[in-house]
Length: 272
Picture (tube, rainbow, N blue to C red):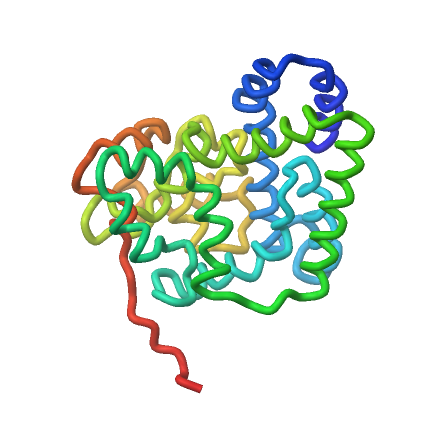
C-alpha cells in the first residue's frame, strides 16, 4: 500500500485541484486509512511478534509515511491503554470529552463532529491525558516531517495536499471511517462494543471484528474471522452492525445517539 501511494504521488503531481481532492477521497484516503489500521495491527506487535518490538515500531513509521501525520508511535501507547482501561474517564482517550458531548448533540452538530472527527481524535489526548514525548515519538515526527518536506520539494504542494487531505477526509465523513463510531458507541443500551462483518473488513484488516479483537487483542486481524467461527455461540447473538454507512447516518440523524452515547467509568487510579 505504501508503494501504491508512492506511485500515485507521481500520477497526481500534475492533476487539477478538483482531481486531487476527488482521488484523495475515493482512493488515496482509503489506502491511507487502511495504512492507519495496519499501524493499529503493528501497535499490537502483530507484524513481527512480541519478541521484536523495534522491528514493529520501524515498520509502523514506514507505514506512516503516505499518511502525512506522524502518529504511529504515539498511537500505540494510547491505544493499548484503551484496551486495558476501556471506558475509564481519564485513561481511555477514545471517549469524547464532556465539551464535545454538549456542543455536538444536535443533528447539525453531529454532522460537523463527524467531519472534524480526525482533529478530535488527534488532539483529544493532548488535552485530556498529556504524556511527555518519548525518543521514538520525536524520531517519528522528524522522519515524517522530513518526508513531507521532501515530497513537497520534489513533487509539489499538490501531492502533499493529496496525502493530507486523503487522510483527513477518510477519517471523517467517509464509509471506512464508520468503524470509529460503530466500535463503541452505544446503539443498544448496555452494549459498549459492536462488531461489523461486512465487505469493508477486506481493506481494514478485519477491524470490524471488534468484539473479537477486544477479547483477543493479540490475535491478528487475519485470524479474527476464525475466532468468530470457532466461538460462534459467544458472538452471533450480540448486537452487530451491517453497514458503516448506515452507522454514520444513524449516528447523525438519531437524536438518541451522539458523542455522549458511550459507557464511561469512574477513574479509580492511585491519587499519587
